[in-house]
Length: 224
Length: 224
DNA sequence: CGGCGGCTTGATCGGTCTCAAGTACGGTGG
DNA sequence: CCACCGTACTTGAGACCGATCAAGCCGCCG
Image (cartoon, rainbow over all chains, first blue to last red; front, side, top):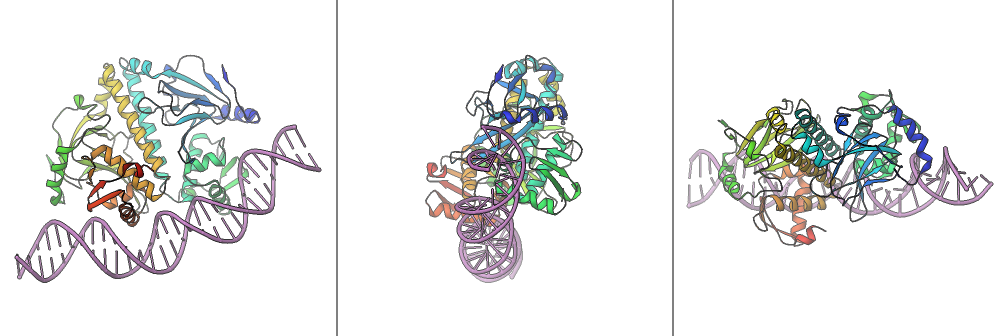
């Protein structure tokens, strides 16, 4: 099945990226239990909505996913970015507090949350991996929160280092997300993101071959 | 055993609070498995350090706990506050990324993380509760992150509403933590916290009988 | 070639930080 | 019992960072 949508121009770009996608710390931790046909989503397509019930746990097979919350006054917050091998959809309670959207054309594998719990009840390996995956997500959100108390340059620096660890090919990072996505993830405006990119470039910490690519030139300086 | 420490003046205050402490969403979710003698910590005492290995999962029996991270430049971030029934210590990987400290005299129950995993491997109820507890923590950290993109008044408002749900007696909130703790949790300065409290009081949204107590006067206005 | 969307750059404004005093409260000692 | 002290908190004035509003640039597609 194909969740059809906008932005066809990004198809090839995303295909290329998917091939290169590297695995992160707990990548594929639950792959073994992620049965069934991977589902395709076009870039911009919604995977689940903010008010939908929490029935499934998701794994990015390839592509890139963002979780989004829109506040009453229109401000938008990105909860996180997820790439090949990452698990998402681990919300609390009955309803999702974020929606999930494919950033570029992506495929996603799913498993019923209840099935996962039932299986974990007599599979110690799964129980452990489940705790690892959720603990990993807690850490990720904590470091996201930690980033939000820093200034603009530090936020962008942390973001680039995070992306470097998760999707870089060598020193080159090809960003699947827009400046607006980055801004909403970092809690700053798109203008400030842009200015900071320019500023980091003029400090020779990064290079910007084009708007969607970043080359890290001085990682230790970026770390401050 | 007693992890002895400073601030004896807060003993009685904390005792009173412990009695009143209400249960939150998943309070006591793992109590059944939290075996052994509760451990006492004096206010200000360290429960675990930032670099200690992640061996245990903790439950507040009574009192109040904060998780703390100190950045290289001296800035301090509070990861969260935990009250009676709350689970903490769910860090990822080998080492804790935050330290945990008793805010007031507190008692804490613990269980080995490995034991929990082993038990969950043949106890579906525990496996489910474990996923609930970790998902709940993910949500809590997400809403913490969400708060950090707002302005000072909204942050303080969110904080008061959160405390209202977790430790209020009616409209009265007795805060166990200092202004500095609140500031480091909200990612603003102690001066801004203080000014915002005063401002909310002058807007008749809250009353401040004393520095450590808040009465919510207009909850719907606080919610904005 | 023209138009559109995403990104960059510029100028001004405002909220929060910083540095600095001032105040309230609890504890200690006379 | 009261005076003193230290700590936590409040209040004030000025500086600075990032938001806002606005214009310009670039690449892509029709």
